[in-house]
Length: 113
Image (cartoon, one colour):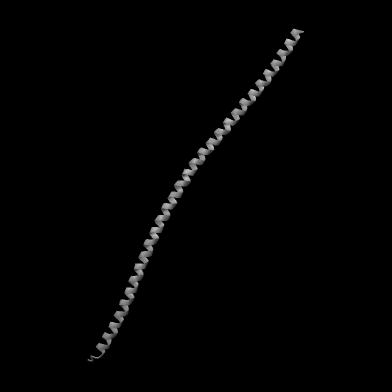
């Protein structure tokens, strides 16, 4: 009976060992799956980092272009103001010249040949 009991205990021990082995195998597979998923996430994070860097560069370029356009607009506005002032001067001079021409015409008309 002791031998039968020993055999039974060995059999139970063997079953427990096989169950533990199966559990460890399942744990190992789960670890591999998690490792693979972590690597995928890490790769995705690196891609997002690269894209974020590109977006930052593009935004910086857009800012530079906007600043240049603003400066060009200010220069254009200043040039337009200068042209307007010059046109006003020309208009004033033309009016003055017309007045002088009329005065000259009147003065010349007094001389008759």
